[in-house]
Image (cartoon, rainbow, N blue to C red; front, side, top):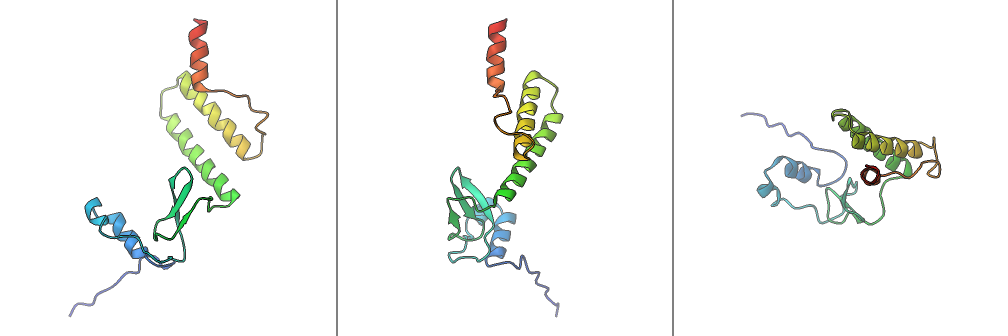
Length: 136
């Protein structure tokens, strides 16, 4: 008789196996596997909308305040800026790309504490385009 090996999917909290199944099954089947109704005990958060954070694993896990500390929020924003810089590097150089790179650099320097928001001049890619049109 063949021996069955059951691999444990995630050991932190309940309902991890349901989340794993929802992630690998086709969408129609994944809808048939609901989130857990009871608190999973170890929430992993995603942003549902502008003001709501939800847990991947259970229905109980909902908050309207960011579940991440200030340092985690800064680290996440810097990681997003880094990815955006990488994507900009693949584009051909234009004035719009340079403007967006400047804005990302300014935001990163504010987040890291190298500059304050008062030191950064307000600029916008759209505003630059409007000014350029009126100059011509």
